[in-house]
Image (cartoon, rainbow, N blue to C red; front, top):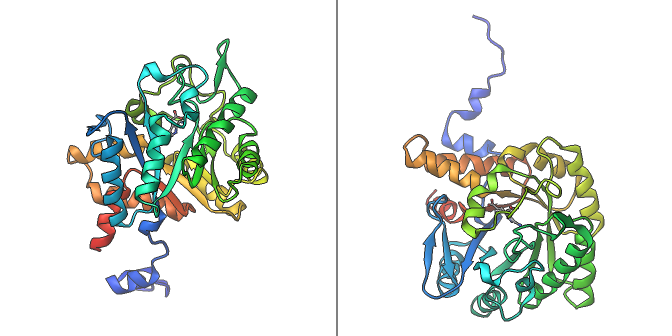
Length: 327
Ligand code: PBG
């Protein structure tokens, strides 16, 4: 029998050799854990469509962050879930220094100065319209939104944010925010831009968690069409030129090609957001015994890193940290 002399199986024959030739490694320092904040005290409410993910009141969130820091998780993306009566069409609460969101950021920083805090910058958690931008006559008005977002960004920096994450997809916001932050002396506050954020079905469980679904229409006039990849390069070019420090792709798993595209074309770190729906799919299948939770989780997050994302925002961060420790 004449077989080819090249036998790829030789490099797979033992755990030691597989380890030597392994190209991609997940590390706990790659992860950002998104966390949900609710009003009140001593509350931890599980998100129905995201088993294992809770909405915490500030006191409980502080405990949670302490626990995560012990696991080696360094960075947290904090999202507020606010009651309806606090929302208005200008998303005023978003830059209220006495509001629960900005107050909680401050409390986290006071208790854990070593924790790196990322914020989500968009109007939806504070907007009575549930859109990421300002609504007038059924339209999302770009430039007014950018002004509101600028105010929010400065307020977040003042409250202690280390990384601002504009997730709104308005045009020109990165440059505007950079200017304002610098003018206010926050030159060290970074911007991780949601560069290629697609109008995706996979945000469903997150909108349940925050009760932030748009009150009318959809987000297709600002979030990208899932059919497009070259357009991601246009967004990246703008965000890079406007001063973004890191470029994010969102969602992650259905957009691995976009992660690779940006990683091949830009020399700043690429991040990817392993979103709520991607988490929910694995959890739902695992609960039924149809998938092995740990293996499916590890493999899907690994694929995001292999595609080119150095930074991964994932609800699996805690479970992954525990798994990585035990290996
Ligand atoms: C909103 C925002 C969304 C997510 C992060 N920031 C939802 C949306 O755009 O409707 C989704 C995150 C997830 O699904 O895990 N600015």
